[in-house]
Image 1: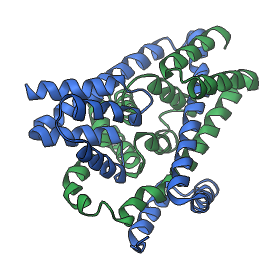
Image 2 (image 1 turned 45 degrees about the vertical axis):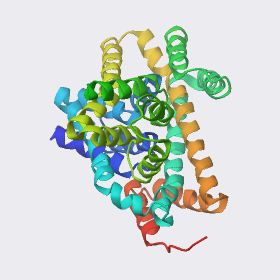
Image 3 (image 1 turned 120 degrees about the vertical axis):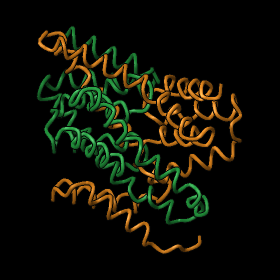
Image 4 (image 1 turned 135 degrees about the horizontal axis):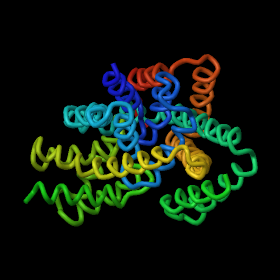
Length: 175
Length: 179
């Protein structure tokens, strides 16, 4: 049942993603690449890059697109619902309670303890993406795009839109 | 009138925020606190801090909750729709067009060209999480948890869900000492 799988993939990824939308990226990869084999690592990395080149929250863009791609408009609606609703319902239901415990060390530790794990997941994912790129385009192109991308995004603070566009043009011309 | 304001506020914050939810937060703050004065600075910070303690995307938690506070379920739907739908539609259009020309060599080249960029973006995020973790717990705890996570998930192939659930349990069972 595809709709159930779309729901479950997004539900799990978002319910475990402590630290906002970016934390759900590797968890969602685990579901849609490793578990359901809907996409290859390369296809997923393309979604992540293009998703980051567009404005707005990343988790919902991935959820909406994957849902649409796998199950049409209803799939998109289910993917979005699964990524947004559980944490929002918790937020509304628990806000009163959480406000009372806002100085609580325990509540703060929830995010603190999970952060290094998310970092590892993101780190492993980075390795997968670069390895995938190395296999399909070789070390030279991977290094050129990677280093230029890092400089433009992090040192020069060029908007991701232009960096992604630049990589698309580079790919169209040289790869 | 109110629904329209809610929609416009979260539409602007969503469409101008690049690079995931976190970049949209200052924009949302501007709309909610500075422009529309729906709540004061302190209240916004409280809501933001609490949203951070719960899993899932920050953006939709904030916009949904603020919409709900302002005008109930309709406000919630309006805020979520404004935050999420425009960018999802763009994403679907872009990738559908790209996939339609998949067999053209230059489109395949484009697909390959963005992979290292995705690598850089995710690598930067990984480093951000490490830095934040170091700030809140110090290097030792960060390295210990990261090391255990790496071993458990990569070498024993345990699902990340189990690792995260274990850490959540550890946080909730930990002692509430004063510092």
